[in-house]
Amino acid sequence: MSKSFNFAAPVTHEFGAFALVPDLDLYNATVSYFVNKVTDRYNHGITLGNRRFRFWSKPGGLINPKTGKQSFEYILQWKDSVGASKCNYTIKPLFGAGTKTKTGKVLNLPTIGAQIHIQSSYIELDEHINIIGEFMDHIDASRFKDAIDRSKSTIYQMARHVRYHETQEFAMVQMLQKIESESSMMGDSKLIKNMVSGKYDMYKLDSPDFSICGIQTKYQHSVKSYRIKNFMKRDPSDPLRHPKLEVFLHSDSKENPSFKEYLDLKKDLDNLLIKLLSFVDPIDFVSDSYFDGGKLYKYRYDLPKWDYNKPVEHDTNIDFSSPRNALKVLAYIGLQSEGCTEFKTIQEATGIPKSSLWRYINIWKCEGIIETKRKAVTHVFFKSKSLWKQSKKTLEDMCVYFKIGFKRHWGQLLIDSGVIRNYRERKKNLKPVKTSTKEKQSIIVDDFRKARSLRKQIKEEGLSDSVRVLIMSNKSNMRHSRVIS
Image (tube, rainbow, N blue to C red):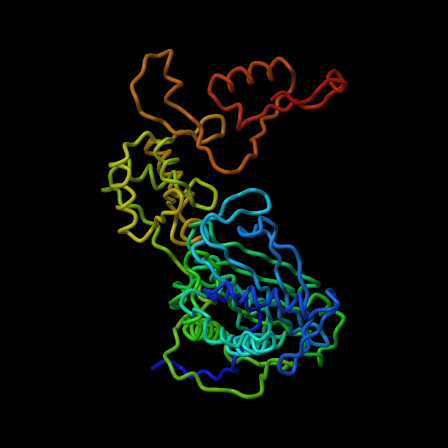
């Protein structure tokens, strides 16, 4: 049975969505209200519930097909006295297929209607729906209150967070660092690390792989531990000095959840956040104006078992019964920057036929060493950063020693095609391993004569892009260039 864990209920921080009303008359009603009721076009106020909104307009990016003129967008804007909680509603027209933009581009919009762009902090979706409904009442458009299409209205941003005591920040970031090191090498994961006086004002992982710690999510999320910018000037008794742990939706325009999935998304974010917190348990929560850390709840579901302090040891023993070309392929992937490359790049570099290359890649996929993912092109990558780091040197040394597709020459690693050629064409067999790094290896010699000779050899070997020759300074050459490359 898994351990029990007490947590404080997370709060919704940032929220962004597009509400769709499939009727252009809502936009027309908004235009009519603005034209007939608004006297001060830059400082008109509308009270909705307990909030006073500023209502104004600005030129939009679409051309109205009926008038041939640039359409306007209408904005409701509010924020609290300290600027922490705020919300904007931007009402835009959707003119359907063939809509022209102000730059002349033609858009094939799938729907005719009105779009309400929602941007807020510390406000839930249900409250947004109520505020929008009150606005419809205000402009005499109550007939649209139930017209929001929840299946086609989408959420592109949602964040849930808790605030915890700064004494636990080191452990929290250690846990996130372990997740980052064990995430896949696809290249989508982005790390942002900012420190101030030994404390983190931001440690952010974009779209990491949470499977290493036994967490499965329905949607793709990111995570960060962060603080307000001026936290160092605040006293430890000030809640805003202490960091927040936040999980948030990794937006994908093709797969963003709809309004109907809002509760599932909220539950998914909360489960992820609570499970991450459980790895650093016990947690001291810190209450602020929006987050109540004093009221705790017992998590009723199973928690994953994972010790982020325990080192991960990967089995890097190589199966010598594997085909030589399979080892060559694995070594080439390991030699790439961050252990990730494209299928086409492997094929071009190694010269292995497509069908055979897929067979070799599938060998290592079955061994749980690499993965593939199709985007615009197929990417091939190591399953985790720690596995890549532990195995790449072993792969390189083994392939060079046993002459499995690689040779070292002039301190560089080269791919050996192994093709039998005439003596004069033998150098065509060798080409340098290309990675995303652009650094050149430097070779230092004593004089220009040696430099010229070496440069000629390097050029013949095709290594000019990766090796440069430096000349040691002395009294006789001080006035001349000391670099030949």
